[in-house]
Image 1 (cartoon, rainbow, N blue to C red):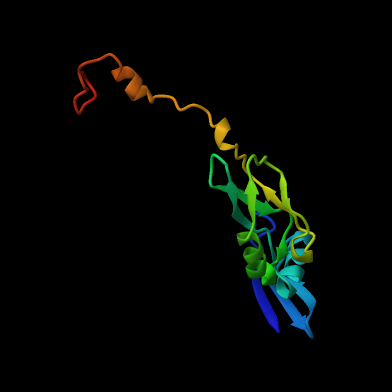
Image 2 (cartoon, rainbow, N blue to C red):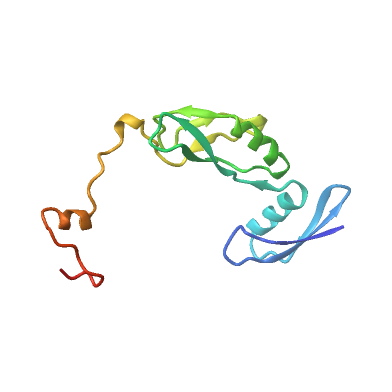
Length: 148
């Protein structure tokens, strides 16, 4: 059996053909670099993906924190991993790079935060917008052109 792939290991985007016999890649053609061959051998048998998603935050200035796996996970496990992640919640504060779950489903991949979420109490005070500040103390409103 042959599997045709577009390599995503570098910007060239080679069209690669992987020949598979008895569940083993026997040859790879079309790649212009060694990374392409490694990509095709993995992708043809057991595709892997870095999984970006979000996790619920309790008591944070944001309701969700963006996260991703720190290494690719088997594509065949993504739905099961998502079920696991969907059940997670974390209390604020959350720091960038904080590990929220280790070795997800035996994949050796950790789930790490990619954004900071502060506790609600630490929310920075809101400032008036420049338009509101310019109107302060003025009894006239700008017309549609912005002129007063």
